[in-house]
Structures are given as structure tokens and as C-alpha cells.
Amino acid sequence: MWTLHTYYRSQASFRVRIALNYKGIARNDVFLHLEKGDQYAPAYKALNPQMVVPTLEDGPIRLTQSLAILEYLEETHPDPPLLPKDPLARAWTRAFALINVADSHPLNVPRIRHYMTDRLKLDAAQMNGWIHHWLGLGLEAMEALLAGHKESGKFCHGDAPSFADIGLVTQVTPSRTFKLALGPYPRVTRIYDACMTLPAFADAQPARQPDAE
Amino acid sequence: MWTLHTYYRSQASFRVRIALNYKGIARNDVFLHLEKGDQYAPAYKALNPQMVVPTLEDGPIRLTQSLAILEYLEETHPDPPLLPKDPLARAWTRAFALINVADSHPLNVPRIRHYMTDRLKLDAAQMNGWIHHWLGLGLEAMEALLAGHKESGKFCHGDAPSFADIGLVTQVTPSRTFKLALGPYPRVTRIYDACMTLPAFADAQPARQPDAE
Image 1 (cartoon, rainbow over the protein chains, first blue to last red):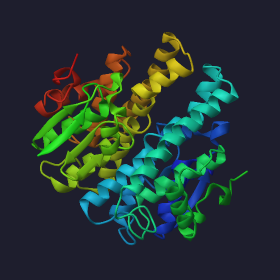
Image 2 (image 1 turned 180 degrees about the vertical axis):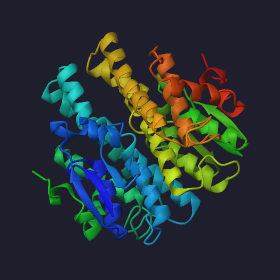
Image 3 (image 1 turned 120 degrees about the vertical axis):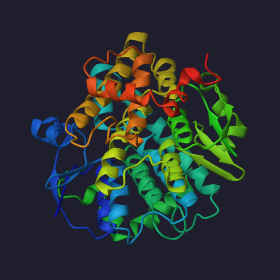
Image 4 (image 1 turned 45 degrees about the vertical axis):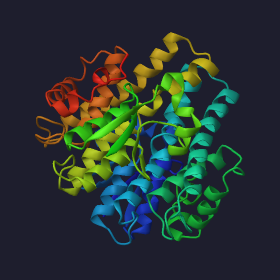
């Protein structure tokens, strides 16, 4: 049985929860509180030298980095798929997800916010401006990509969810938390709503986790 | 024939140049100067709505996001491979690369540095401190992962290069540019040197590109 080291608000943990749910893979959760610094405990650092969540563990197996975990689950549990079959479609789907995974989310995680407030002494307005700026740029790119993607359907690519939809959901969720107006992104918000009709996505939401505050 | 929209200093472009070289895939280069804002031209935005490099183009095909491009090249040109065969080894390799691709590199790109100097009015010491902090954390995690990985050999995983080595190289190269001391990371620097004995890696270096300044 897998153990997921997770934090309810972590968007990276959220991605992995969605994929595990969607593929029907059982797990136990171990909760870390990132704002209290649980990730810096020596025992966790031994498990994940980067001291970030999630870590997916089973005996000696330790998987880290949400996108690498998604690829692993796709390779070992291909049904139901979270990637299309065609290589070009797979590339589009992965690139869409990476707008969130690489270029938006890492700019807004707790360790960044702490550095900015504690070391750079930014005030709340500067911090909020930073978060809105980078989340907004990612949403703009996602909206434009969806507008130009003929194969976009109920979900980002076609009528089944993929890595792209997981990245879309973990872009929209913090945007709502930080009160970024989503009006300019109608395609993004329509697909977010479609995702949330699926129990795999809805049950993985931060607010529904046992460690939610 | 592929066209690569690239900038010599872009670490994301560097990753794709390595993979194209390693797999023997020919390309033409189109050079954008990110510091002069070429990426914001409407014609380029139409090609890449995120306005970042690289974009790999062939007729109607547009591939973006370096890691998605690497996966596409691996699927369509599997020989020589840049991923091991075993799913757990593939996951380790991808997770290692993502320390650079997701959690270090996006914090130090030109658009971030411009935001920090132009909008947050950070001075040179603050900017340098920020860059060193995040590059250093990534290098620490890489060094610890290599120390704990029994299958590490001449390269990060075994004796052939993989996505992990590409991520290692694009972590070390900006660290050198920004004069971060690499003494604490002997495994990382040994593998960097091994990579640079390979023409595919060495020829892809920023300093060897036609647009290098």
C-alpha cells in the first residue's frame, strides 16, 4: 500500500491525489504542516532531500516531484489513461501542465512567500501583487492555448481528463484562494467546473482533506 | 526540418539543444534576444502564447516547454534513449530533472529578475542572494539524491546520460554564471564534467551558440 506524505494546501500533493483517485489506487496519508515546518524534520529530509511534498512511499520506494509521479502512475497503471495516445497530443498536454507545474506554482509556494516576507521584507500588497502577476500570466497562456487548440472539448484535450486538466485545476485553485478575478478566463473556468464534476478531482481538493484547517 | 526558437542563455533552450544533438535530429535556429524583449513580439506570441523560449516548430506543429519537448523526442526518437527502461528509474530520473526544471530555474529567469529589480526595486545584493539561495537549494538536493542513489554511475543514473543529467547541467551552468561556489557539490560537478566530454552536451552550451555575446 502506498503512503502519501502530503499537505492539504499543497498544489503538488493535490495533483498526485487526483491521479491516484482517478486510477483507483489506494493510499494512506501522512500529513505534514508546511507552515509549521514539518518538511524540515530530519526524518522527512531523509525521505525527500528536497524537503518538499509530496513523497509517495512504499517500502524502499520513494517517488518525488508531482509530474514525475504522474508519469510513473501513467506507465504502471495505464488504465484509465491521463495522457492521450498520439505523441503530439501528449506533448501539448504535458506542456500545458508545465505552465502550472514549472512556471506558475513554484513561484507561489510557502518557501517563496516566506523568503519574500522574512528576508526581503515585502509587504502584503507587494506579496499579493507578485502572486497575482504570475498566476495571471499562467492563466492567460492557458486560455490562449485552449482557444487555439482544435481538439479541446469537454476537457483541455478531448472529452477525458489529462495531465493538462490536472495542471489547470492546480492553477485555478490557488487563484481562487488568493482572490484573483477569473472572468477573463472563461475556457479555463468552464473546464475547471467540468473537472469538479468528477469525484477523483473533487475529492482531492484541499478543503476535503482530513488535515484541512 | 525542425526550427528551434532559442536564446543562447536560456537554460530551457539549452536542454532541448542537448536532446536534439544527442538524438542526432537536425534543426535550424531562430534567435530571440530575451533581454531585448523579442519574445513579446506579436508574431512570436502567436507561436507561443506564454512568450517564453524554446518553441520547436515544424510547419503547423509547435512544441513548447522543454520537458514536454524532451518527452516527445524520447517517444518519437527512442534511440539513443535519454530515459532508462525501468519505471522506477524513469521516475527517479524525471524527479531529479524537475528539481531544476520546476523548482530552481523558473525562479531565476529574466522575467523574474526584471520583476524584482523594476517593480520590487531590489538591489544587486538582494537579487544575487535570491539567485544563490534557490540555485544552492537545488544543488544540495541533487547532491543528496546522488549520494543516496545506488545506481548512480558515470552519469546520474548508470553510465549513460538521461533527463537527470540534462537537468544537472542546466543547474550548474547558471550557478557558474552567477558565481556560486560549487565546492560543496562534488558528485554534481563530477557528473557535469562527464557530460561536457560528450559533444551533444558541449556543443549545446550557451557560449557555443551563434547568438552568444
